[in-house]
Image (tube, rainbow over all chains, first blue to last red):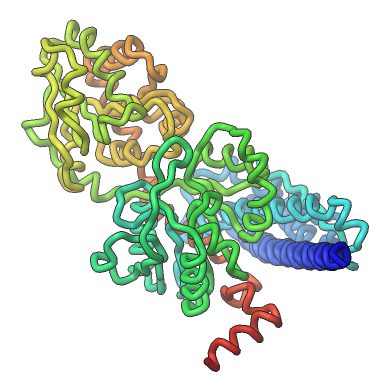
Length: 167
Length: 394
């Protein structure tokens, strides 16, 4: 009788732990999604600002062409090619900013300011997203999570490889 | 900019009425956010509930426990847990900002209890300890609930990645840079003066390093004076000072914020000989903002705050001879002093609340995306809902 009670207790404990792990995992997946949504919005905004810069007096025709192309690519990229396209846009923006330091007008000044604010935010968003992804991956690696399929049908999140140093 | 108005709940782990860097940071942040039009409630342990400002809610009396080499006045336990939960559920917050959630305190309890957008700020910098490998797995489920983590310095970030294997965004502590730049030089503090502010009887503040350096300094600069401000046992400290040099020391006791600004713009050099245990070094940021020429020990926090010597001179920590050398060099070279303090004052603008609060707020904005406010996690469980309804009937 005693061992029976102990077995039941043990079983309940395991069940509680499984539900605890599942809710933890659910929360983590949620975090991955929201941080991605954040990053996505910011990147879209950046592409829009890049287009505006391309059409402003800041860019000479050649770099304007380069920038427009990169911005469109970043906006239309499939999820697999996204990080490559965004890095391309970073590169194009970097090239342009490197040699456009000479006295811009008010409007252009505002554009550059907006861009630098966005870049700051994107940096934070990337850090948040990468962190969410890596903690999710860590929990999903656990044997107990895999054997009980606690993650359900949620796809395994992958880190977004963004070259933050070219931002 | 700071447009969207939020309801923000901030949790302070340490007793509100004991002085400390974390408490000051939370007070300034809360007041800044309130001025910007947000609704802020701070939950903190407090000894005297009468004296609390309107935005602070007491969680009970703190208890003193030894933690990380010092005595921490924190609070936890079942009664505190219940208070934390009722504060969360009655607050109807859009977001919780928890400070130092990795130590046993109400911050950890709040992190455990709450469900929804949460931001955590990590202040402490500590060496890697074995005990953390035992604690880590317990903390992990709570810490991973935070939507975003902030570290106040590179040292604090490294502590976090080392101990809990999670990354953080670095946002420094804030100061009101304008207040410090408005100080005016007082003739009683000018001349060949070396300033020191802090609890001078605490060994890790390093006053002894400066005392040991003084015999050498006074040989090269006979008229040098050391001005020591801050709380502490003066008589006990005087015993450790050479009798012949005693007249070079002046103990000012605790000084007000306005005096601090004057102090920083008066002294020739501001010296921070701390030997460790410092995560950010807010006093250095204040000294820079006040236009002082700063000499500091090369502990990691100071090294990064001073840009590896760009905004202030560094000396080898705990090495009085090196400190003496650096001080003599600077006392003899007013032009170099001038250049360093000018660089420093510009750099200090980065720590101004206008900049820092904006950075913190953009983290808030990212944390609340997709969230629908903060609630107490356990309320959502069916059996608890049943139980609490029972209680209400009674």
